[in-house]
Amino acid sequence: MARLISLNVGLPRNIPWQGRVVSTAIWKYPVNGPRMVRRLNIEGDGQGDLAGHGGPNRAVYLYQIESYRYWERFLDRNDFVHGQFGENFTVEGLSDAETFVGDRFRIGGGLFEVSQPRVTCYRLGIRMGVPEMAALLVSHDRPGFYLRVLEEGLVEAGDEIIKVASGHEGMTISETDALLYKPDHPRERLELAIENPALSVGWRRSFEELLHQASGDAQLTGNAGLIAMPQAAPAWAGFREFRVYSKTKQSSDVVSLDLEPTDGRPIGESLPGQFIVLELKPDSSSKLLRSYSLSSVPKGTRYRVSIKREFKGRASRYVHDELRVGDPVRVSAPRGSFTLSEGDNPIVLVSAGIGITPMLAMLEALAARKAGREVWWLYGARNGRQDPFGAEVRQLLSSLPRARSFICYSSPDSADSKCRDYDLQSRLNTTVLQSLFLPKDGEFYLCGPSAFMSDIAATLGRLGVASAHVHTETFGAGKSVTPGIAESEGRRPHEPEGVTGTGPMISFARSGLNVRWSSAFANLLEFAEACDVPVRWSCRTGVCHTCETAIISGGVSYRPAPLDKAAEGNVLVCCSQPTMDTVIDL
Image (tube, rainbow, N blue to C red):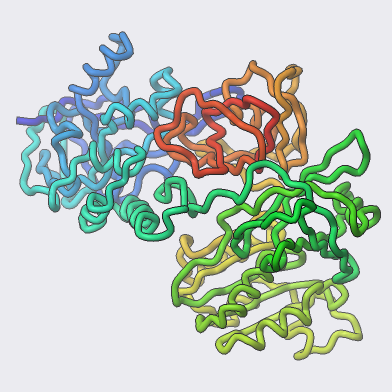
């Protein structure tokens, strides 16, 4: 009979790690006597990162003593103590290969239900002194699992574990874990997992995305359960030479470039909302890389981008003042997952300033297909002189039968007419959104300054819009995701201090930094961090795909190999090393 060997708890604490401070509760310690287990936690226990741990579906983490013995042999160690894997319950029995999602157990005075496998992150690697530990747990089918608390009660070491009910249809923890993180995602097993009422909402949503991917376009690559949205492979790798076909002044500070390939070959398919990277050469000795959203649906063999003059923007000044019709420009294929969702629910396009560009392409696509969906257009600008596409937007909206529009000018000119050019003298802000009675079941697309998007996203959350239905696009470097580490004041990207690289040239396209790779770094993630380039990560060892990023040109090798491949045209920066000059969308 299975039994509870050790009951372990621990509160968050700060530990030094790679020159930073990590908040973590991965250190758990055995306690004597009974402890009350409640819906969210065990008495005396806590989590350092509630985004990734804790909550009703992850109230208690369980790991088996048999897996302890396995890892002792595999790692050739004998220094493990109870709580070594950050678990609350160290148990004898209940292996991952024999325990099913939905199984229920009576332990002491509590009743528990198996809710999901463990989601491992880099902090286990810190605790174990083995950085790749997160990947090892998954690749060796020994993740352990979480329990939800159905009945609160006292529990203590030595309690017997009595099975009182079996999980739905029988899918083990090992198989459930592999179904998400490993390459094989059989449709019938995905359907079985989704049907299990005991599976936590987050895991069910991931399997629904994988099933949707398996049922749709076979050209979509990547693991849809782990990344924001799978996408088709880019139409080409690297850069192609285009020329400026036309240059149009849209407003006082925005010009549009129509670009066509010099070789006359097709430009392939793209989706409204995607971006391209331009390689600009102001002179023979310098190269500027910048990402720009397409501001219209590609027509024939041309792309349109619309670029705002920035006061300190070297690239935008070059485009506005020096680039001429006929000049060559190297262009990447369109990329990005900031694209329109399928379905019948409302679409709400919210933008400010030059953030209008991807929204304009989306609006044009909706108008072209004469979409029957409810479409909301919300836009904020300073005045008509800085509203680059007012007439174009009005024409597109007039062709949509269920379109609604609300435009704010913060400082309208005398030439601007209320009700014709704009609806309200105001910034597009929280107060405005609260007055509009927006559809809570809509898909919301936000683009504009970072502070604007943060405020709008927070407002939508307060209005009851689910975060999964709020999509954002950032111009320039995105916001870092560094779980457990307090966000520091950002420094401008720079060459790594104290290290001079001699390897391939690494270009961080969004950050505008070109710097040579140094083998002093284990991977591109560590290299980017040393350059203060904003990055996103969690496991740091090729499991979770949080770090997955578009690779515009170049190539990489992997060490260690990721458990599942990145989408074609993407790279996992946490475990990759460049093999040639490489451009990354960071």
